[in-house]
Amino acid sequence: MLAREFLRILAGTGGIPLIKRRLEKTLALSVILTAAAVAVVNAQDGGKGATSYMPVDIKESLAKTVARMSSEKPAIEKRQLDLLNQRYDLSNRPDKMTVMDRSKPVQEGVRVKLPAGVTWEQLAEMLPEDIKAKDLFPAGFMALPHANQPEGGMVFPKFHIDAIKASEQRDLTRFDLDFDLPDHFLPEFPPAMYLTSRPDLGDVTHGKLIDINNYYETFNGILNPKQLEGVRLLLSPFPQQQFNFTEDRRSLQPSRGVSCLECHTNGHTNAAFHLAGDARPQENRHRIDTPTLRGVNIQRLFGSQRALKTVEDFTEFEQRGAYFDGDPVIATKKGVNILERGSQVHFMSEFMELLDYPPAPKLKLDGKLDPKKATAEEMQGQEIFFGKGQCAQCHTPPYYTDNSMHNLKLERFFKPRMINGIMSTAEGPIKTFPLRGIKDSPPYLHDGRLLTLDDTVEFFNLVGETKLTTQEKKALVSFLKAL
Image (tube, rainbow, N blue to C red; front, side, top):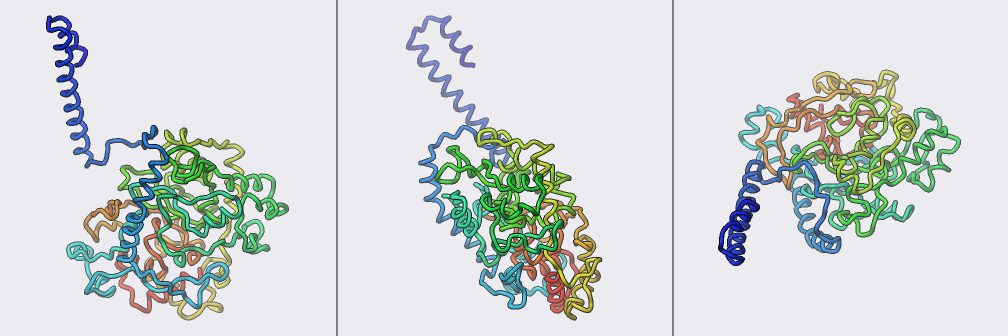
């Protein structure tokens, strides 16, 4: 358009001033048309931006980014804390009878808050469409947003940040964001590690956090050379979206990145979270609570949407895209690390396949309770699990998973809404996570929205419409703690 106008002017006799005036008008018209086109695109896309890609060429300096995001941090964290307090009872109420691997107590009680004027029993008697019409679905049962959903990225609990800073002098602190859930709702740190190849050794970590400085002395003579190399790679930091050397990182100092066992601490989990890389736009991306790697050898579906069928696929995929929010384009900028499938990926996977569940002394070979060792309440809980509760339809023994996916169709209970930047709506199918050792892996569900096992039982009682009594729910929790 500009070229045609310019040639037409040159063909006339208006001279340079006329050329200048007409060019200015044409440029102004071009700007207006461009703005209109952008407005149309945004209107069609809900104003979210019609792109699947993250910006690569950052226009803001790191210093300005730090100043801007640091000033925004208090308000963002207050907004998330207000949401958590609105949804949950966050008090520290430990179960005096149940601990995790070593000594950390399991939190007890239902922490999800009910809407005013209704009880759990009343809700359980209502039809899903009535709960939806009256807007009575508990807020704590809806999608849990990232601590800053529009920004996203990996966020680590402070106890892990402090341990890595002390042992490896790497700082995983984000200048824009801190971890949001209280420590008492998180797994024990550092967790124990059990190996299928050496069950006689019990916890092979002896209470230590396994890191790049002590893995060799810990496993030399226990693992074979391939597995040792696999551990080294799993503990090697690789550049990641928020922790790298570029100006769009979220750490103050340049960072070598994060390792696989940064989130899967000691082959388990520290409850670090980020956003799933499989959906766009940002408001439709699920928060992902780090699942345990224990028992990964018996699992057959991997990745946030379970599109990967082997742990080797998952290991390779993490380096090519997941560390970068599912964006291999920006991975090249941040520092992509392509692992060699035949050796490096295989070595890492071989070690992960050795990670075992914790001992469960009350279980028989078939994964069910031994009546000689279990309490009456645990036995009642088992009966409910395989009967009225309908839990075993998906969670089959001995590992309590069917290695499949199921759609809970939560949209039956509430109308879609925006919650701190996340669109809470239909979520589709999710993986059946194994329940062996489940008491060691809070919080629960794929995004960590359920803080306790009591919350989890209450959630599935409502969603599954099983109408359990108060005592039946209590017994079911006791059974889950024994797995």
